[in-house]
Image (cartoon, rainbow, N blue to C red; front, side, top):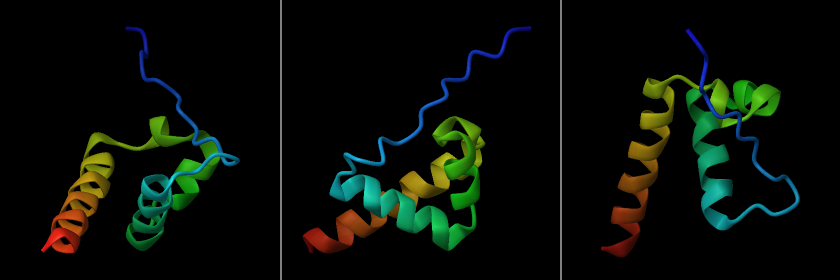
Length: 64
């Protein structure tokens, strides 16, 4: 079975505000080392979802 996971590393020279938020959240939940080592492709679905969920909750709270 092939591993079709995309290995997407953040472009460290062109980080957007959202990218910085994602990295901040990743640091808080303890997966920042995985991202530095191999990009977002190294994260499990659960870890990626957790980052996305926290990001969405923070953005929703900002809008209120």
